[in-house]
Length: 234
Image (tube, rainbow, N blue to C red; front, side, top):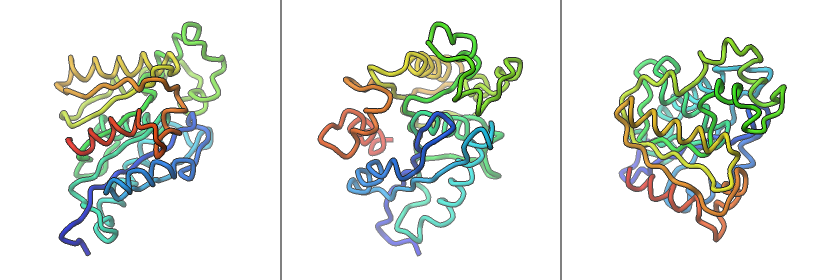
C-alpha cells in the first residue's frame, strides 16, 4: 500500500562488459542512495554470449514494469522512478529509454535517466578498434552484438533514438576508456542537435572507468555528488 510519504526510486544496473557482473557488486550504490532517501532497486540482467542484443534493453523494460507495479508496497513512489546504469548497464538503460520499440506497452517514461560511461555506438567501436585500442576479436561487444559488422549499424542506440526529450545525465570519467569518452560526447551531441534534448553532461574528475563507481558510498563524492544533485532536481 502506498503511504503518504512515498519515496523516489532509483533502478541502477551494474556493468561488466556485457559478459559478467552481478548486482551484489553495486551494494555500495544501493546503500548510498538509500541513505539519501531513495528506494533503490539493483536488478541483474541476462549476460552475453548466452543472451545477445537486445536482451539487456528487454530486461530493463521488464525491471521497470515490475518496479512500477510493485514499488508502492515497498515505500516507493511509482510516479518518481529514475533509471540508471554504468558501462554495459548504461548501454542497456540507454537503449530501453531512448528507443521506443524496446519499451513496454504504454511506454517507459522515467523521472530521469542516468548514464555512466556507457556503450551507445557499437558500430563506431568496431570501426575504430585500432584508435581505441580494442582487441580483435572483442570479448565484450562481439559477445553481445555479434561479430558481423554488417549488423552493427542496426544496433546503435545513437541511430535509433525516437522518444520525446526527458531529464538525462550523461557522465564519463576523466581517466575513462577513450571509447567511453567519445561515445558520451556523441550521444550528447546527437540528443541536443537532432532530438531536442537538453541533457546534463559531467566529467568525473580523478577517476577511471571502474574507480568512479567504487567510490560511491565513501568520502569521495566525485560521482555520487553530481548524480544526487541530478536526481533531486530532475
